[in-house]
Image (cartoon, rainbow, N blue to C red; front, side, top):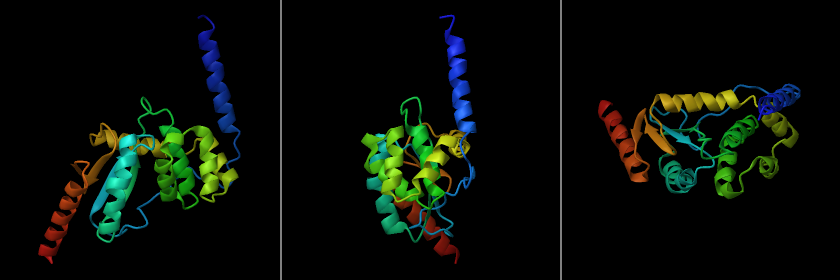
Length: 202
């Protein structure tokens, strides 16, 4: 047991050195993610989803809530995904979230979201470059981005925001800052009510 702390310290030091030695040419720590391309980027009605790529309920919500919502209300709302990786339950959620931001740098954030949920059961660190290749990303650039861990702060910003507004689990949806149940009808009813109020003000 007396050697445990030095071994842990050595491990952290090695991880730090590997991260520090990554070639960061062409990389940026800043996020390039934004509203879903099918949504109305200028809409005053904003839907936020706090999600976790390894969360089974989030995978179901993607097909049962998010996709139908965007198909039917994409012209009326701005939809944004925010990271809330629950690392105590999902060991690969944090790295997947960072990978999505690396994909976002190449304009493929939402493509990554789709493949991550579609192939969620295969999610692990070594599969991410395979997915990047399937998405026709610059794989070496993607891998350098991921190894640099420079997107971790972006993910944690979303996570801290989620905690500050009371997010306890995933998925959690908000319509214009108000929490709503994870049901398509509840969300669309809230949208319809906002649209009605806006029309009454015209």
